[in-house]
Length: 113
Length: 112
Image 1 (cartoon, helix red, strand yellow):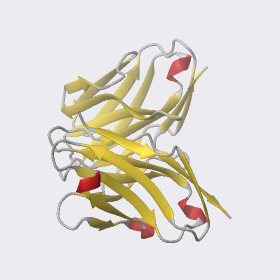
Image 2: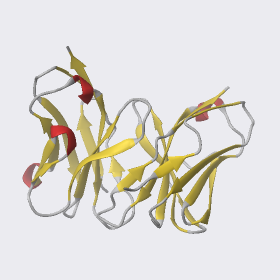
Image 3: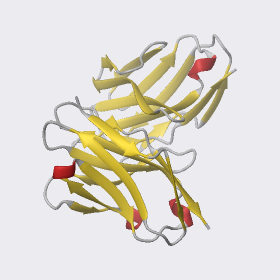
Image 4: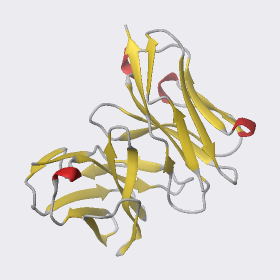
């Protein structure tokens, strides 16, 4: 069965520092991978996705993620954190065999001034 | 752009009331989902629908039912609301590409 693990329920970084949010997955077939962002009291918004092709994926707001098959990882990064990046981030995976996404538990990103 | 709307952003109900949460999408998507979100538990799937009048239970269907009479509308029903159903409820529809889901703004339900 597929599963998604996000390391750290809370991650705190200083404004201007590197953001690294970790996501590891288990899947028996090449997966589709997603990162979503949720701002306070809002729904989820797609940040980026990996389907096929280039393993480094660029998304909105300066975020990017790299699919590493050998490490079964899809970590999210941003070179320089901004106060507006404070939100909860969710990693999700699908193997395409059904309609559903398997969700990680989420990581709340805190930006220190 | 895909738009998913939910009938209320905030809702306060009393224990035992019947509660309807409505979700509408404008992209002719076949699949729609209801999740609840609680701190530390992430998103948990309540029900999903893969076509009109078709539904399947998700991970936590107890205490909930759903209705999908038209393709664009997917309703979540709490037959008799209880305090442990106080939560954020998120509706989503699935696009045609790679299972990407599009979310509504959420309904924060409080049951007193």
